[in-house]
Length: 71
Image (cartoon, rainbow, N blue to C red):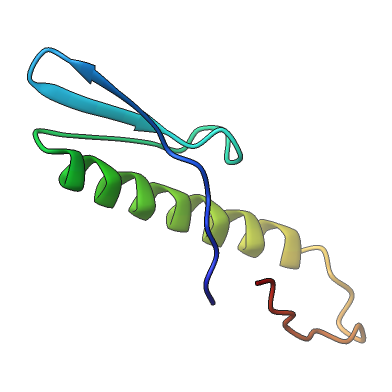
């Protein structure tokens, strides 16, 4: 699945710090902007996977479960 999210990037000394306003708690850091964005991407992925698992725990066993693509 392909999604795009905003990345707000700031420089703090030698480090780049980034967060994603659409996904509370998702942030990343790195010595390069590329490393910072990669770490942020991994954080977003982990948070979304964790939320999906938590939500699906409460789904009744007889409910239909299908995927929808957002582009």
